[in-house]
Image (tube, rainbow, N blue to C red; front, side, top):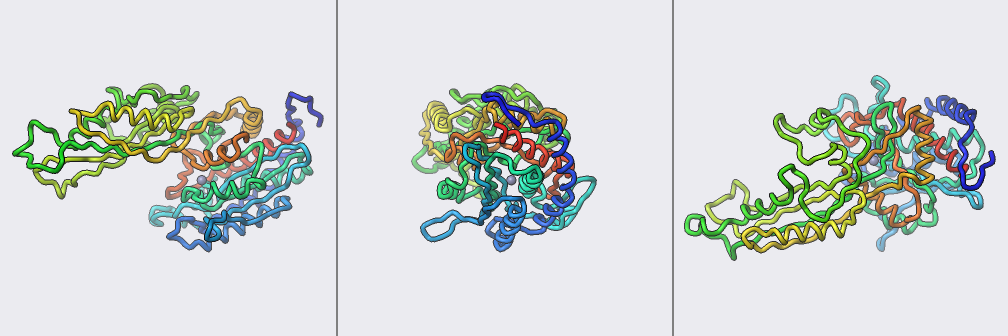
Length: 466
Ligand SMILES: [Zn+2]
């Protein structure tokens, strides 16, 4: 097929129909491959046997060898004392001269199963119930691996596309990808790509695809309020001087306004999302108690995805069991601030520090210790890669994808952007709201998984056409 420079051509309807039929034909075997992966208990948490993580890397390498990628390697990051972290699988078909390269990411490690009694089925025995396949990793993220393998198998029948493909399946995502950054830097040449597809997120709901286009970032700090040189008797001194816990509470209370919006000046918000949650669903999912009013203003998705959110996540103070009738001289709180897409983390932390320091109650000594910072993510919504993805998802589902935000962060996305600043990152996934990733009874919807495989095959076809 020819394409005019500056415009992109869509695959012909015949190609789409052919691919759809091909994916349907391949799907039973693919599902068998997913089941085989779920049977390997590749829990990356160090309290579990890491031989299973090595075994899952081998199994993934074998699947990729069978998917038409000529170079398949199992690699580690290297530290001063030898290999670091869990084994990752990197499989490649280098790009023909002048053609783009796509990197397909997933992870082969899983969360611990938790209490087996809370599962309805054995977590490591894949079991189908009502069109969903249950098992630890069935969704997060072994289905992501299978989506990549399935798309490549479907395309190999169409002959080699004019596009380079690298599949990168890491083995330590569920423990925070500790050696991800050194791995990226040490294998930069192998992993360099124009478009990165991260298949580790979720769709909006069964029947409605989603592209994850924003993630909030995170900053935190410890704030100490000091009021006395040492603890003193609350009967002898109480009255003219307030204790540190009372003063810390008053300081914390300044961080939100009366409606529960974050009151720290200088923080940014991104525009409201186009979809919203039903309040009843949010209340059920979050287990908020009857009678409790929700905080903040605007849409619920805006409050969750595109505005800052601030929580007190710990306080160092005398425990109730050890309480005595003294005025506490000093107390410390850890403040966690989720930041909106578009917010600079250092600026957010500086704004939080300035707020805390300028609101010292009764002139108490306020000391702020800066903590961690993590960048938010906002995908450009009109890039050619994003347009290709929208077309592929809409063609596969018959329904346009929804732009989804995530209130939390995926820390490795920031690492990918640091190392490959020019790559377009597409965050896709196979989960739906009932997938229960990380929880008991994790599952993937098999009908949706088939649509994900087709969407990814269509995406690669479209990207190959430029
Ligand atoms: Zn995951």
